[in-house]
Length: 458
Image (cartoon, rainbow, N blue to C red):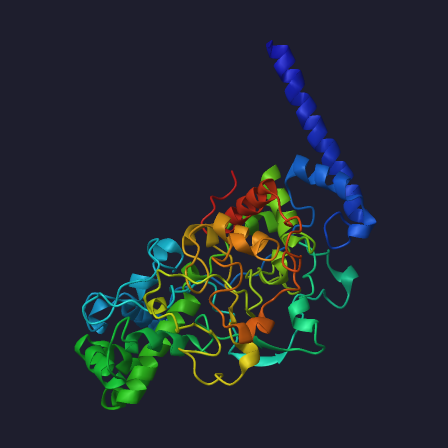
């Protein structure tokens, strides 16, 4: 190709991009081309324009937590977070299971993390990520709330780019549903980050301290009493319950104040702000992620900013019974009579009689999910492809999911709790699966844009 021909070709590409941008702007003025108003524009034409540009036609300003130096209390919390001397083995800290290098999730691809007195014990569930918990509310059960509803005056701000949250049939099928939401851990048994920080210290399969008095003695030996004295007075070293509580408060403040726990600097965040573009495959994955008739992922993993500009957390913080297959690699599952019922126990005991919630687990954020390497409450799947295959095949070909073609990790008496109404679920056995291999690959490509640490645009 001659230099003149190459130059002409580049000029043609630029002209196409400019024309697409002009057309895109005109469509935006007419009401938008995203899922939010699908009746206002031909979907195919909109898809072509998005594929050409890859930019968000409705850029927004995201309100991130302010970046500022850690408070004195948060600095003490950071020390505690990395302090292995507070464990019974002397070899485990909070960071051992919540690695900063892995977005405060499991440090490797292991199903369960070792712990206990001799670092050979294993718990029941993979540790969830500690990232993006600063907006998590305490556990509660109440009417389903559309926390992604558009603002009262749509003309006051541009429409959100990712489309509205699809209604969840599992929450509305029987009228005004009482929906579990909020809380920490897979079963929501901790209401605050303070409670969450205390849990592993006393768990026999983790840091394995027998009681809070033992932890307090270790805190004093490590100098935390003196560190906390200027903040809470000299009496704190003579008040073990107060010392323990304030030490956990320090860990909580560290998680709230340190931007590393809620970076909001993924490529998707930059795309929302109009600062970068997504590839054609990633754009297609985003549309499938939001499409109520296809992936419908955004029904639970909300992808749009809040009405007041907070970045999306990619979770509605609600609970679902998905009937994930039993994982024989979980040591507790060697007992054929054992079953993990989530909200109904065994780790949580106060809802044991609330059988409508048996088998339900917290919906986690999908931020950094491409890096996690262990998925669902029992770690049954080890890749995003396996996760999406589960959603795709569970109802239409259950024999591909369960050894005997029926849910095998939830007693039959609780099968009514399983979400069977929300796409991609809800199809009949033998139906065509909702997603093709190409579409699954596109959704996985989009999920990769949710990883923290995207390079700033040039």
